[in-house]
Length: 507
Image (tube, rainbow, N blue to C red; front, side, top):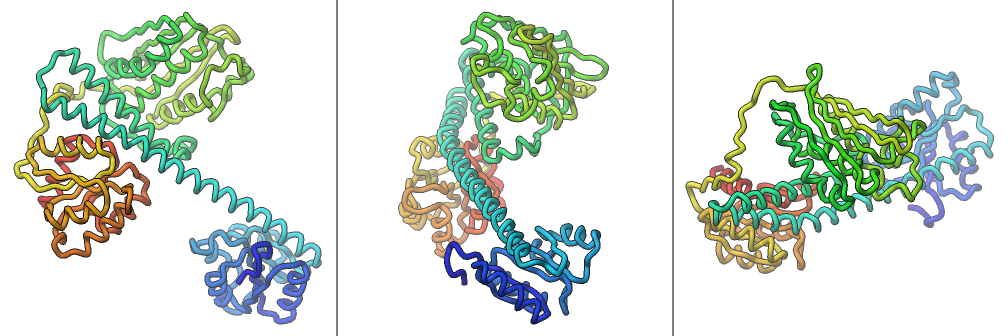
């Protein structure tokens, strides 16, 4: 109903004809397009149907008071972003204004209102509304970009990881050096996958909303992974890194990948802010029931004026550009977030500029010596008791071939397709038990392919599994609504593939 993109639509709600007419005329003369409602029920209906930019809402209405109308507008996702300017000639006390604002109103005016004041308030709110819409649009585009980026990063990670799994299965008896190289690739690939997951929602990092996968973790073993992650940065700057470990195991309850990330970030930070050829020391000890991890360097130090903000997001400790090697100042903020999630704390100390720095992480010790199954990492995965006919659909040839090879090694009959039309044709011809279907296909989306397959009686009992780089909640919801039985995010290892087939087919 909007007349032009420059003319905002105002819904004027007032049960008094004269007052409603006066406010409508004022707003129309100011260039606004105005529609009217005389009750709370009518206001809610018109707000939903017409989508106004702003509701000018009188508080005293015959059926529903304006406070409740405002609350319902703000709670309905279809009208939640509509601006509400509440007015009243009856509720004139400060608590009434507070009540209106608590109900979701964007502003509250006492009547009588001067025409200029009304128009100025409406224009101010509309300006804020435009800014908010622009920010939401930017946020939406950011989410879309991150989703696409994550998908593109996951595509090569899947074949890399699965290729190593396949090599391990085809030739389990290799030298210790070869097996160590395989483990390094798998470990670093897993690190990349976790970082990509974080990339999908940057706000989780800034708000501390990162889910931990807790297990008993032995710190001495974990430090080797952390040192390995930071080693390229340490070596390229020719630093001397010393590692001091206790003579006994120290266990903590935590996420091994995240704990390694904490130490890795601290080591990378030390390498970054230490001149070439510097000294970095990593030490672990147990003190007063806490595991204490210290990273010390003889680098550029911390200015006392900036010590309090060193862990803030995007902070660079006030260093001039020639003293900052790289990075956006995310690493230390993420360290603090992860340490806090583990129930610990992190501190930084320094004698001042050019005096080096020490970062100390304290984590609660997990008493006892949990049993581990580390030796099972290289074991050949259990083969399913039954074998099935499986169709793998992926336009990425490497990814499709590696997934097929893993499933064939498990004893299944496996076929491939690389686009939506080919997938539908192959499915109708083969009537497979399971279809692993990528979402991003060149001719049609995997969701459309799934919907088409579900319309064929021949494929009624076929299990559909989305195997994709798109891993946001909305992607999972959309996949399940299209008829998928399971949603898996790349990369997926052999154990997960076989367990998915086994579980779904048993059902």
